[in-house]
Structures are given as structure tokens and as C-alpha cells.
Image 1 (cartoon, rainbow, N blue to C red):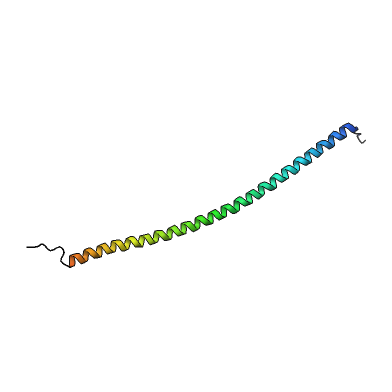
Image 2: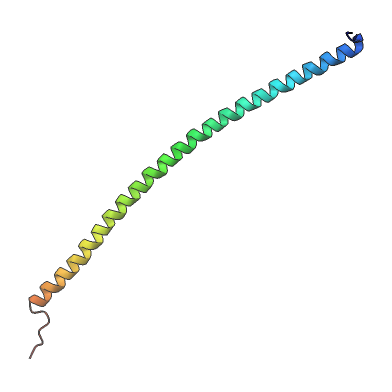
Length: 94
């Protein structure tokens, strides 16, 4: 009970199978390219994240330094004011 396939239909079937195989190969190529692109994006994102982490650390260090500079300036102003008062700068002349 085997079916006989006439030759014109067999050629058409082969052409269709070949077409499907080519499309499958094209899809595989696209998938490989997309996986490669995704991997490159993952690496780029990791590099970007590390860069931002480093940048934030440096900004925090700068913020700490500025805080101490402000403390020194305010402390110097207070010390100068106290020295002025102790030196008699607030005496009223008679």
C-alpha cells in the first residue's frame, strides 16, 4: 500500500523542501547574529554599570571633601570673629 508520487509533484515537493531548508538556515543565521548582538550588549551594559559605579564613588569622595572645606571655612570665620571679640574689637570708644 505504498503511494506512488508522480514525477512532476515529486520535483515540486523537493523544491519546497529545499526552500524550507534555505529559510531555516536563514533563520538560524539570524538567531546566531541576534545572540551575538545580545552578548555584546550585555558586555557593554556591564562596562557602563561599572563606569557609573566608579563615577558615583568619585562623586561621593568629592562631596566628602567639599563638606570638610565648608567646615574649615566656617570654622575659620568663627575663629576670626572670636579673635576679634577677644582682642577688644567690640569696645565702645569714650
